[in-house]
Image 1 (spheres, helix red, strand yellow):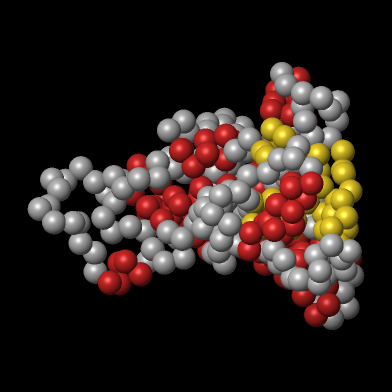
Image 2 (tube, rainbow over the protein chains, first blue to last red):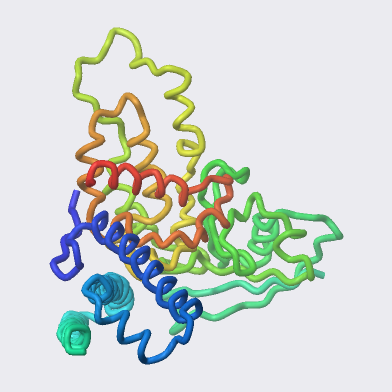
Length: 124
Length: 234
């Protein structure tokens, strides 16, 4: 049997990609619920409460984990979309160039967001 | 009068496929779609389609019937053309050889990949390899597949990657051998399915379950395979 091999998928195994996507989804759900809950249940919600929250290390780590989860979740999802629609079967050799081009842009955005996110979280 | 619109394409004479309209007097009978095709073929011998057993066992006459994949021989007009208009197209996604006849090679290639035969290299016993009734029960809902390709050709993931994604029919059969107590190649089989395409292009939209003429559930089988892969991996 010829096994399909890929080097650009996140975990390089379908099982791990699948698992990472589920785990990151749970983390993102927890983060969204926490943030929405904080906004609605904090008395005198405003700049003061917001900056006090983000001054704490656990909140910065939690936010960074959520940011990395977003990056991983998006990479796995968008990689699936790219390999569904930009295929050599439909477009010939130019699909390889186009697919790699899109993947490099996505990777660059992922690195940019990660560095930028860390700067913001530890910069305030 | 029944109006029938049929996809026609003869690559030797036609530049492009087209829809041809027919009229048929069904005399008020609730015919099967295959009966309609046979009656039309008696008038127009160039009309091409596959058929064999005409009772939903062989899986030859899978086609797209008024927008939904199914077997022509077991789909009545009351279901396929309630308003008196029947539209017949070949199974979507596969190359058309002529009219309603498609090239099934991509489909069979994926079936071949899952090695659809019992693998057991222990010495064969004097009698059959026996199974407990409970183990035999695990094959129910799996062995009944007739490989008509209605499910795989209803699946967008199979349309996009028919060369990489096994597809619901192949995966149902993959699980049929993974679940078989007599098969000893479970680990090799799972290793061959662990890449991001073979199993994991299934996003669970259940088009396969929706169209299966035998009422089988490939999505559930794929879920079982995923759980086996996960159990092995974590």
